[in-house]
Length: 235
Image (cartoon, rainbow, N blue to C red; front, side, top):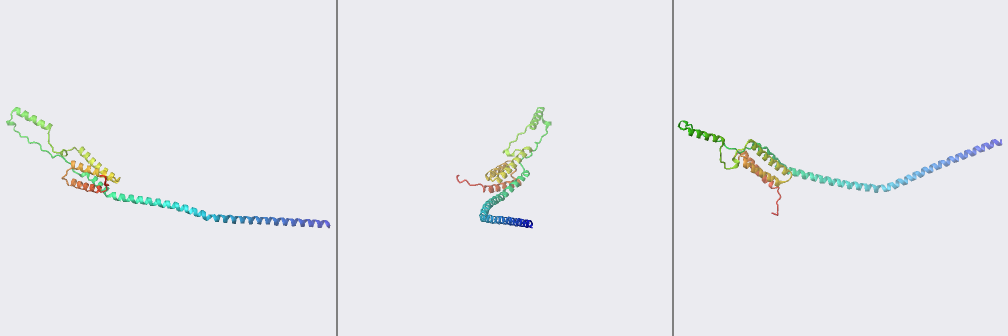
């Protein structure tokens, strides 16, 4: 009977100890959880305290970068607008130069008038043998060489190859003037137009209406180009 009581008391003590140990473990677990929660709250509060300052610094950095981007965009827009204005101002003269260039092929050039062959008087019946021989020699010399006096070099007839060369030279002056104008070099543009005028006056028919019209157009265009040439106050 005593042995049974001892066994019962031993089991009771073990159960009490086991329950006490379990309660202690649960307390320790809850304490650990509470400490973790407190740490998280403190850490979150610390971060929230410093968060506005970091956000403000980031916002300021972004605003600075945005200001730089807007400034560069304004500069690019201004440059594009200026370029468009320049192209708009250059376009009329460039178009007129293109029209002059297209008219070169139709301009009539200078050429000598056709000289009729001298009339040959046939009076062989009244000529002696010596006179016939001299007449034959004279006719042969006329066929081999004909001398003609001209008043100006521009009146000399040119071969088709020489005429093509002069037309190409005139086209080159117009192309050079157009390139100089688009490169904003009005002085060079005017010089090429002057050379084109001189070439037309020398080798093309001044009495032709097309030549007179292109000379008038070149003169007006040269006056327009001269307005863009800066005035040198030192002279």
